[in-house]
Structure formats: structure tokens, C-alpha cells
Image (cartoon, rainbow, N blue to C red):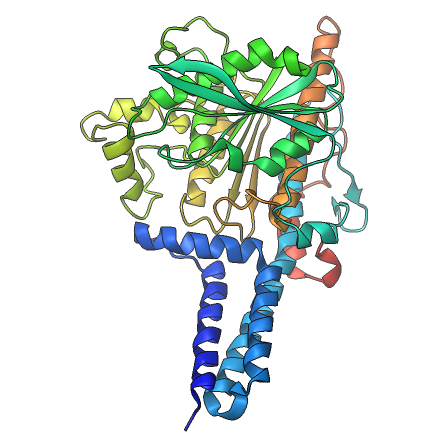
Length: 463
């Protein structure tokens, strides 16, 4: 008769294998189950090497104490080996984020021939793919180490007070405070009802601050106490404050980029597209809230689900009950006016849209449709980076995919800023050259790069 230990090994191996399977095929319906599976899949995808280690250690412990004395133990070992192989493949595929993100940025910027500086990205001459430095072992071992040397965080700066509620900002800047630094303002996610600026986008904020940027992460009022458009009004208040106070930290208010993730991506996108809408700036309608660039991560761009991308009514129920406190069917114009996809315009700023293929909270089709609509309407560069295997919130800590993606974000922001500086310094001079002087090989875009790399995954691609 099989021993309890062999049965325990089998149960443990099946649970571990479910984590691995869920990382590859996360459910998107029903909403509650999809949310639960998101957390399990998110941590498995972005910490695949760590999951491999703990699964291997657990199996070794079971085997050491005799779990292979009966058939359940041997079945458990086979299941474990299959799970380990899948985790190893998942870890290796993290390198595809480099080609997806950098290829999208390089390919989109190279299409624009309006003058400017070249993108800080070189290509591998043999494959025509981005030649990037490898990810260090420290990044693998310490994914939750966010702080960068030489970066100072000034926390809790009050930027507005609305109805007795103080809105605060955290400011990240380099110790030496370079003069006239570009400014990046970040809006946290959390479904418009929760979330903390102290725990989101820390890798990006610290990295860009180390690069010489002034980075500001802001609060905004949350539902159900707040009712839309309170949220976007607070984001605009943050932009006004950033423009007025950036110089205190070495920032240049003439260049302000906005970023956000999830619900924060929705708000950042809306702010970048509606700077002249007085409905979103109550009491400060004439204030300047125009931004010079936008980077949105896995944002919600269509609050009406006009294209049927959402497989359930979870988002509609949340918006109706807690955020807008109105039914979409009763007031469709109000929801439409708050949908970034309905506000795309020719004079939108340069944009980088980032989304993961395996996002089980916000359908990747949202980003595809929004970036296509924005690209059709806007005269500025629109980059769409679809990150293979990435879940929602994949860049919250320093995962391999997050690390590669943030490199592309850095290159995008620095390129747009350098072009902005060049245009400002030579406003009267004729513009020559290309937006990006190091174009991709003819016909090779970000998707083609990823496909080429995926067909021939080799160990050295794990960077």
C-alpha cells in the first residue's frame, strides 16, 4: 500500500504543476476565478527560476525521506520533471521581451522622418535584432531590490487638498540634481478603488531617476468614495503641481511625460489626450496640463466594451457600481468621454503602449485596438510593445521581462526627450534627418523579431 508520504508528494507535485500550467494558460473567465489565477500566474511567470528552485527543493525533500517507495511517488516525480522543464522554458522565453519591446520602439520611431537624435539602441549585425547587455545574476537573485544608488526619494509632498483629502506625491531624483532634467509623472493602478503609489513602478521610477530624470508618483482619490471624474481631475492636479514645482528638484517643466499602469494607465492615457477638456479640470480649467510623451502599461482604454474584448461583465459592474455610480446603458456618452480610445487625436504626444500577451485581467486586445486607433489618428510616433507570456503587473518588480521592457521604456523616453530638446534649441532651423537614425532592417518589425527568436531559442538568449 502506498505510504502517506508518496501520496503527499503526488499532491504537492500536482499543485506545483498547476501553478506552471496556469502561467501558460491563465483563465479569463469568470472574473473572480480569473483574478485569483492572475496572482498565481503573475508570480510564476515573472519568478519562473525561483519557482523552479522551490519545486526542485520540495521534490528533493520528499525523495530524501522515501516518497519513491510506491507508484504515487514515481508519478509525482514525472509530473515534477515536466513542470521543471516548462518553468525552464518560461524563464528562457523572458528574453523575448527584449526583442518585443526594443523592436517595437525602434521600428515605430524609425518610421518618422521629422528630425531628431538617434535611439540609444544598436542591432546585432548577424540577426538584425537588438544587441543588448545580458541581465545580471543580481537581477535574477534579487527581483525585489528596487532602490538605485544615487537616487533620493522625497515622500509625502502634498500637491493638492480636495474636500479635506490631502493628495500626496513621492519625488525621485538623482542626488546631484542635474539641471533642467525631464520629468516623468506616474499614476498607480488598482482598479480605481485601491492601490498605493509607494509600491508600484518602483523599478521604472528609480531607474529613470538614476538616468537623470525627475520622477513623480502621485495619489488620487479612490472609489467608492470618489466618483468619476474625480480621479482624472486629481491626476491633472498632479500634472499642474509637477509643472510648477519640478524646478525644486532639478526638473524642467517644459518636458513632462506621463505614465501609468492598469487603471492608472487609463487615467494617464486620458490625461495625455484631454488636456483641453475643462470637464476634467474643475476649478482650474485654464491650467496647462499638456504632456510631451506617454507610456501606458496594460491600460484600460475602452470603458464601454464596444468591441466585445472583455469576456465577462466584471469591469462593467465595477465601473457602474463603484466608479461612475451610473449604468452604461443609461449614460453611454459619459463612459465614452472617459474612454481614451474615443479621445484619440492628431496632436497626441509620442506614445509607448505596453501589454502582455497573457494578461488575464485586461485583455490584450484592448491595447491592440487602442494603439491601432491612436496610430491612425496621431501624427506622432506610436509604439506598441506586446510582451510574450507577460501577465498583468509584470513590471511591478525587477523580473526579466520587466527589466528588458524598462530598457525599451528608457530608450523611448530618452529619444523623445532628446528630440524635444533639439527642436527647442533649433526652433527656427530646418529639420533634417530621421527621428531614429538607426532603423531596423527593411521589413523587420518587433513582431518579426520575436517570431525569429522564438523559432530558434538557444541558451545564450537568456539575457
